[in-house]
Amino acid sequence: MLDTWLARHVAERPDHLAFTGLGPNRSFAELNRSAEHAAESLASRGIGRGDRVAIWMVNSQRYVEFIHAISRLGATAVLLHRRLDENTARRLAIRASARILLTDRDLFPLGNTTSIDLHEEKSLKNTQAVLFTSGTTGEPKIVRLTYRNHLASAEASAKRIGINPEDRWLVCMPLYHVGGLAILMRSAIYGTTVVLRERFEAENIIDALQTEAITLLSVVPTMLLRLLRTWKRDMRNHLRCVLVGGGPIAPELVQRAIDLGIPIAPTYGLTEAASQVATSEPSSSYTRPYCVGPPLPGTDVKIEAGEILVRSATLSPDVQGEWLRTGDFGHLDATGRLYVVDRRDDLIVSGGENISPAEIEAVLLSQPSVTDAAAVATCDEEWGHLPVAFVVTDGSLTADQLLMTCQEQLPRFKVPRELHFVDKLPRTASGKLQRYLLREHLQTKYESR
Image 1 (tube, helix red, strand yellow):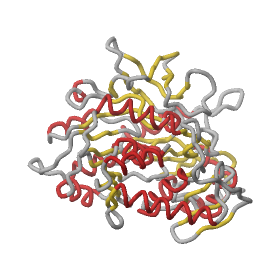
Image 2 (cartoon, rainbow, N blue to C red):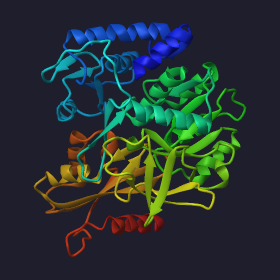
Image 3 (cartoon, helix red, strand yellow):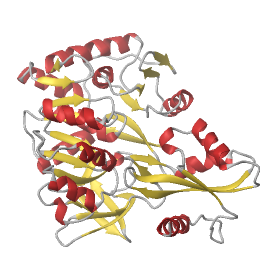
Image 4 (cartoon, rainbow, N blue to C red):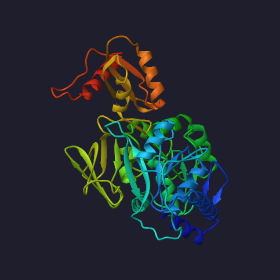
């Protein structure tokens, strides 16, 4: 468990830097004390073993301390997307059976609490966190991750990219995302340093790489693109691996990074698998376009009818059956390396964020003038993909008015970048929407420009 991992490092090297960024530096001994104080504060509110505590915050030192504190109490962290509106955050917290909601400024009770013995034995089978991941139905799906999932993931990742006791892993992804949470957990397991940033800002990250001896970095393709625009060929840094995941990576982008001497490692992962499933070796990634490398040690991958299936100790206990059907499509080569062709036909992956088309469609269809609606992805050099909407209306509302409705009800990254009026949407005889025809229509339209 996390508090046990921290305790081991406190005993072995208490003065080693555990955390830096967005607040005072914390050695393992200092971070351990901060976690104790935060745990006592939560316990005074009645939070105990088995309770769920929702966190709706931006990346911060307080966020890190609460993650540790919740673990120490034997409770479970419910991690909420910070760009949700307050009503949605509360609804999802209640749906996940959270007792309280922690925000950047306050704490809100949501239900009854229990009591706990702080020294009670805990198990690796216990749930460490509950995350939400967008699915094709529009309603976010709950995914539980256990301490065993995190441990298996950390051990497998270490066998692929190695561990250095002096590693400093820069976290510029949100901690509510599995990509950010996994780094926090692995650093606690390894006894290495977390360097935290509130968000990704290319110039800030470049500065950190030059001044803070960063050895590991995890980004999505759009982040890598922004870094490449700022990167200088002779820039001094200590990087030994840059993991790039969250969506297909254009071969040209990989080659540009390799040409600049960046040790890039394309990777494929899932929330349900506690982050990494397969990761390329940095030295060879550029020779195999769209390759994300071999599955990590202890992880099995097979292909059925083009779909990627995963079996691993890293899989959430919520996965039904031995194999996880990912809904993603790809193939394995003769050496066992995985190539990801597409990340779900319907799901829109923009800047590493999953966007459910159904969520956009629901907002559009809430307008009486809209009789049918569909959202699909269109390719974008910076973001990977962007959402585009098609609507059938009675003509009483303009595109600007409909987009304004989306801006009022959706986070900015989910708002369609374009809106097209059509007479009807392509559907099968049974009424199933044929999104691929809309994507083909967009591609033809853009090619003709």
